[in-house]
Amino acid sequence: MLLPDGPKSPSIWQMFQWITTPFSFLRSCNHHYGDHFTVTFNQKFGPLVFFTDPEALKVILTGDDSELFDAPGELNAAFEPLLGSQSVIGLSGDRHRRMRQLLMPSFHGERMRSYGQVIQDITKEVMGEAVAGEPLYIRKIMQKISMRVILRAVFGLNEGPRYQQLECLLAKMLDKMSNPWKISFLFFTILRRNFGPLSPWASFVRDRQKIDQLVYDEIAERRNHPDDSRTDILNLLLSARDEAGEALTNGELRDELMTLLVAGHETTATAITWALYWIHKIPPVRKKLLAELQALDGLEDPSVIFRLPYLNAICSETLRIYPVGILTFPRVTRSRLELSGTSIEPGTTVVGCIYLTHHREDIYPDADQFRPERFLERRYSPYEYLPFGGGVRRCIGMAFAQFEMKLVISGILSCFELALANTRPVRPVRRGLTSGPSRFRMVINNRRRVNHSA
Ligand code: HEM
Image (cartoon, rainbow, N blue to C red; front, side, top):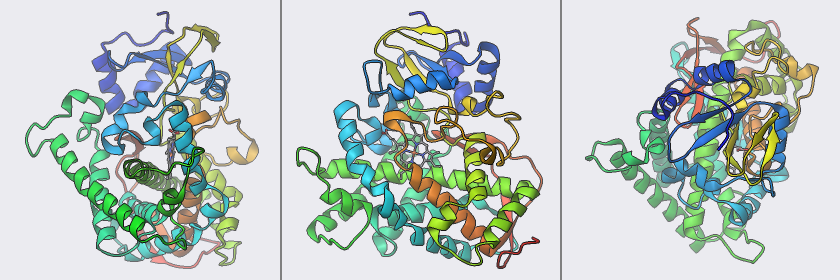
């Protein structure tokens, strides 16, 4: 098969670089081979063609469920051990479409706005537990907030032994998942074996069983005691029916709930952590944001906060410069077509490289600089700016994540004074299947109302 040029090193070495240093690997490919290139991570999966040109991305993401492209869930098999075989991420074609239709209403309009107060309350609750004056890993605090938010949104749970056990077990498991070595079995199926009770796979399976038991217990209890007044996602999914009038089975429910918990927790916590870093790294950014928040005069209306222009620009720039999801999920060409001036044969696996697209100097001058103003100066097309992907697999939680980012950041900045604990550089690193900042600490100096001159 004729493919665009790319690294010639053995696939195991390409995979190693992709796992350990994904950003420099991509930059090096971009430098040597231009705005589209072919990499091979393993022979079984085959070559992958990376695209960074918005014209090509437009063709891929507007045609990813047509005679031109397919968006097969089978190619997302890395997620299966965690999310299960019926997760929307692993489904294809009609089954994928059906599942998205059942899930989407939970993240729309009124329903989503109803999570606003919950997010604000949880931010205050968790920040209130943080010790002032000591250097703290702010990421851990953001993970706690996003875990509580997603558990509350998904299950409506906020107290009781089941909730506490779930919070603790999920946090433990997802923390392990952020270490690429502890989850090497997601990348290499050969490692999905019990090499003894202490091996990563055995420990993962044990944790997963405990979590599954709690999720199935909750589903059973909710089926036995239906309560129409509840507004959580599980309630919505329990009553949801597809076009054929079919309800979700327990297995489907477990896999979708797990998908939302996993996809919605780590990603959003990472994005908020990055945003807090940038806000405190660049004093003029912090000053402008504080001025915007002060103008609210203590008003905490979530829909007003959601529309604040500078806060929006900070969140957009945060997800541009180091996108949490480095790539879109893979798509496969169904027919021969021309992309970025290259003829691509049917059956080729292609991905949108979000990180390199967001670093194109022709679209984002001084792309390595954090400059929220660029989002106030011009509008970017959905193929120039795509932190949530696009097309038939566009992130289901996009609006929810943006809402949460804005409410948590504004809640923290309005009530607390934070500072970076030191000036050590913070780098983007791999965190499991996504990316995030290297470890850094912040100090919560004191609590105060927003002060214009701060
Ligand atoms: C800042 C936070 C987030 C980022 C950057 C992000 C990014 C992404 C990206 C890049 C994709 C792939 C899209 C594609 O291939 O076109 C995706 C898919 C997905 N995301 Fe998110 N996401 C975030 C938060 C969330 C949240 C909060 C949820 C749910 C609670 C969620 C649920 C999903 C699901 C279910 C999919 C798979 C959709 C499908 O296969 O049809 N994400 N996300």
